[in-house]
Amino acid sequence: MNICELNIIKELFENSYTNQRILSKNTKYSLGVVNKSLKNLFEYEFISKNNSLTLKAKSEIEKNRPKNAIILAAGLGFRMVPINFETPKAMIEVKGEILIERIIRQLREVGVEKIYVLTGYMKEKFEYLIDKFNVELVYNREYFEKNNIFSLKLVADKLDNSYIVPSDIWCKDNPFSKVEMYSWYMVSDNLSKKSEVRVNRKNELVRVGFDDAGNDMLGISYLLSKDCDYVREKIKNLCKYEKNNSLFWEKSLFSNKKMIVHSKLVNSKDAVEINTYEQLRELDNNSNNLDTKQIKIISNTLSIDSSKIKNISVLKKGMTNRSFLFEVDRQKYIMRVPGNGTKELINRKEELDVYSKIKEKGISDDIIYINAENGYKITKYIDNARCCDKDNKDDLKRCMKFLKIFHDMNLKVEHTFDIFKSIDFYETLRNGQKSVYKDYDSTKEKVKLLKNYIENSEKRFCLCHIDANCDNFLFDKNDKIYLIDWEYSAMQDPHLDIAMFCIYSLYDKKQIDDLIDIYFENNCKTEDRIKIYAYISACGLLWSNWCEYKFQLGIEFGEYSVKQYHYAKEYFNIVNSYGVL
Image (cartoon, rainbow, N blue to C red; front, side, top):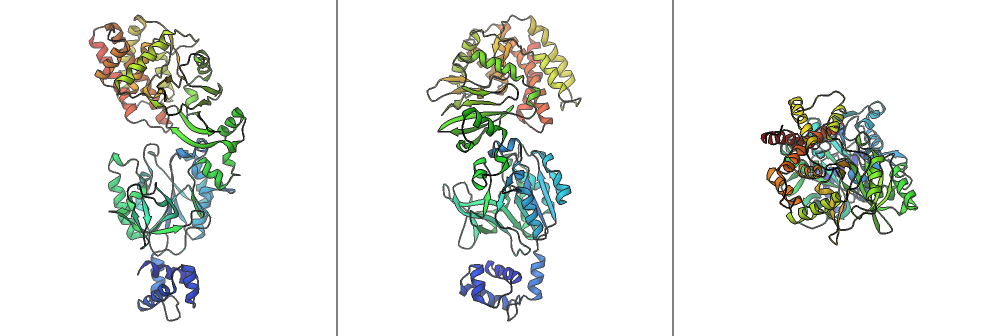
């Protein structure tokens, strides 16, 4: 049977027809197509002479009936800033109804009782669904660094006449049905260059050409059991390779240049993917989720109505903070929102003191608002800026010269950054849980041996950045340099900033020595070089502990974390090789 015939069977099941013209109107097929399909269905013994469904047709309907649904709700929803700081996308309110609750109710309306909800970010927010809707929650531990194909992998064995539903789609009418005759994937009639597929004349979903527009991909899908087998095997193979960590689950639907399923084409007004604050505001400007703490701060600080806040977008996945970009009256701003667990790590009053010291020095970005209680900060956006390229020698020369000028200002504050106390402090934040590194205790004992050497080395103390990594050096469109993000800044040895730049950049020893030579203009004393090596070892252990604490909060830094621990061990051995301990 073809798609037309399958759709007519579905229509005949849901409504009794003797009038072909009404059937033509409701299916949107021409009268000629309807008459030909009815004739074929009669010959196949799926309908009787009066267009009633036969037992054979009813058996086919029963075989293809939906058995379960999988709701994908693990992602962080970065584009939903600032709402996603407090609420996962699945839990946003649209027209007085929680989005995921609406999806679950729509599924239940068509008889789907078994529902799996894939969680990750803010997983605790979903717990109430167990009692309220009797759903099964499945936690994806890799939600931060991997895309939703890895969520679907966790329940791939459950795929069997299944709906797959993203949790950020609002459908005006119920998109699900008691009768599903074939596998499909939902797309909208809106065209976008972000889409991978377009609907062709055969109702197939084929890949679009390079730079061509396709139909918006909405993510809702229905898979018959026979197609589930293909998807299950495809997911298994795709998830073997680290290069596929960022893949969407839809990749498993492709075979060569088209999807294995048919299209379900809907009007763009009837099914809306809610990815951003402004998309939610456009769909429902009365949603309670629009009135976030961050939006209130922006409105009050700039003395504007929230409707004037536009073009909100995530800026970067910060290691300590979450930042987003927004625009008011064509002026761009950045709002910093402290990340999870940040209050344990950062003294915001000390940060405010630092900003007061550097305010008139022309070395940092323009602060519009900063709150020493909660760490919220608003700065003017530096347009057309770029970060320092850690592999570009000219950039490094300019940044090290800038850093040295800052150090030579000899600015003073009341607080100090103590490396070894910080190592112990970050360790205590693990709440007694052992390090993931089996030789951590012996490594720490070795690193502690560096303390006396560092303290007895010749040095001067001044205000240092502490987090002077390549991403915090910005070049504006006029090539002026700014050093941003001063929250760790404190009194310390300026040479510590060099070490921090190196380990954040994941430099090898040659690159480290090259950077030291740049800062010192090829005139670095041996004892200063050894001291910087010691800082690299100590700070490697410090940031390794920091990463382990963040990991307990569900934030994974991958290679960066492991490399910091390697620095602790490797550069202790390098310092020790000089016979100075």
